[in-house]
Length: 453
Image (cartoon, rainbow, N blue to C red; front, side, top):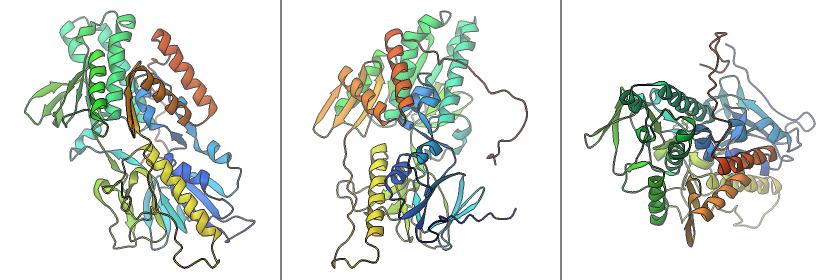
């Protein structure tokens, strides 16, 4: 197949603006595009999906609390709001980055760049157990959350028809691996289904036969948060009838049985993996430098520039920055880091373009990035959440309201905000939702999706 080489320049001002290619339409990439001055740059956003999604609420899609459309937003619509012909979106999966020829190769085209922004985020990390990719459920994308939702509902429907109680009990063993925010939140959501939904909607299922277990490899939940948050999360999960097992490291999962490092085994009809992430990998062509650090993240300087590569920046979860005094081992892989870095690099590039050709005072340099840690939070379920701020910790109903407010205002689009708010209010008062619909895709017609490999 002949290589398609796409050369983007504005017809009205051809060649005068630098070409910026942004890989990834997540928090970092989108915030960069919104703050870059399009009078100075031509920007092309490349993403394998044509929508921006909101990962902190994937667990609510997986537990049938929210519809996928409520936490996803079309990238083309968001870019259209910038009202500029100098920004465009191309759907594609990046195959390689050629730093010598300064171009990005996708499965559809080759796009040249003058400046490259890598903001592709992370994928699941199975810790040297690659076979788990085909056997466990994950929550790193909207399709993964949808698959998880469908199979949770499918298990409940099949268990409701099972007359053999022992077999029914075997079908209802849910295990979550990983006690970070995502693991705690999906375990709490399953606990709410066990405590409130199953007695009302699945009367043929014995509530006590539904087993939900959260396994964490360290000695506490929410390891990156305070000890108070860890204790409050454990209490909240206990009240939702979730069993928490600390210092429990999984070494194998086969035929519905989990094997732990201690040698103990645990049955699991559904295993949800939230134990870790690693940066999305890329093939780098045209350099002998190795800019990859731990976690497969790009090593960057204090201005997010990738070490050893010219005009290449890495933002968000995929960036491993040195030079921020408060985070010598790199920043946490959180949405706030990605948002702040996206805005920071856009501001620096705007300043550089503005001063191009001007004589500036000797020693003048662009500022370094400093992460402003605004705190962290996690929800355990209805009326239950934990919030850590710089000088304060709170939990319970007030923390839950704060969690809802922050997540609501962070969503893109007024329609999404209203839809999510209505769903939350409705569920709060009657524990019901119209989203527990088991809709499987039809088998025919048989065809391959155009992006399938």
